[in-house]
Amino acid sequence: MASLRTIRGRIKVVRNSQKITKAMKLVAAAKLRRAQDAVLRARPYAQLLDELLGSLVKARAEAELPPHPLMEVREPKRVEVVLLTSDRGLCGGFNSNVVRRAQRFLVEEGPRFESVQFSTIGRRGRDFARKRGIQTRKDYLGFFGKLRFGMAKEVADDLIAEYQKKELDAVYLLYNQFKSAIAQQITLVQLLPIVASQPPKQAGEKSLVTPEHIYEPSRPRVLEHLLPRQLAVQMWRALLESEASEHGARMTAMDSATKNATEIIGRLSLEYNRARQAAITKELMEIVSGAEALK
Amino acid sequence: MLKVEIVTPERRVLTVEADEVRLPGVEGSFGVRPGHTPLIAALAAGQLTLVQGGNEQRYAVGEGFAEVSEDQVRVLVEEAVRAEELDPARAEKELAERQKKLQSMRPEDPEYEAVRAHVERAAARALVATRRF
Image (tube, rainbow over all chains, first blue to last red; front, top):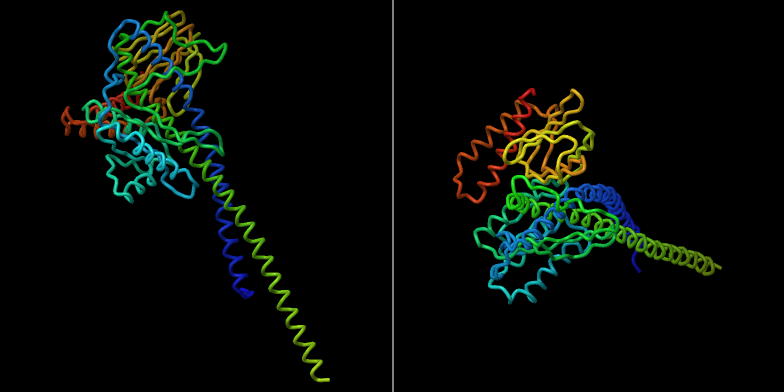
């Protein structure tokens, strides 16, 4: 049996770790709330843009015009996957889930394309790629904690430039979609060519864009103005959701770490008390038998 | 009265009532008053003016869109800053820096477009910050 002193030392170590995990959990919970607010605040803008795009695309299809170059589907030969991870660790399976899904994509979908390359957002994604010797086209670091729309725009503009140069035929984004504080879902979405997604209408909600609207300067010009922005907004939403997911994942991970620590402390205390009892009993026995021998 | 809403991707900047709003369209500024036809307009970076009674409030806005219907104006722009919150000296300095950067680039550069957009936004801010009308 371990000595009393070593058990006491171990309890202290676990207790210190527990203090840290508990604090991290509280911090993550506070940050999660802020990130969730940011997700909500981004909604009105994105919704109207979605709707605008939907109606413009419909009108264009009805007029039998060819799709805009950014929406035109080419045979996907060269494909890029953007991995959206976090800068920091200690958030459970948050990053490894993204990475695992990326590997699955390579195995399952990879053979369909001529080449698949990666870009990463977040330090963890970059580190993963480095460790496996995977070349990445671009690595974006230090976004999280101070997300600005300009960052989403930077990423989107770069992708559009590559796409227009025909260096890439399709771009996918892999990220943790925010479901709830305790649930994230790994999601793979197509960024380019742009897909017009009509948001599901709730009953009674009326459409903002009507056939009576006139377009200034013209429909094609408005569409042209809209598409790059739509991509940036999609990126923006993913960034916000990923950040909220990260804090959610960290909160859950730290919560279970704190619980585990409590359990370990309980077990160690039991062991410690038993050892102490045994030592006392042993000492008593020695005294008693010593007294017996003197008789 | 018009109900005007200014929304950026980051947040809802404001919702107010106004008599008139003047917007920077991609092909020149235009004004919207109550009773305007339904309209969807592409906006360039520039100055947005809200007219409330005799008062005028000016904002520097980034590129975006405006949607007008039933005396409601929704302005979707990438940024919106009140004139009073802008520092003229800083805005001018930023504009000069960005222009210098743009001049060092060629139109073929992949980042040219992005930098050009930056210059336009900086120009809008400088304009709104320094102009007093």
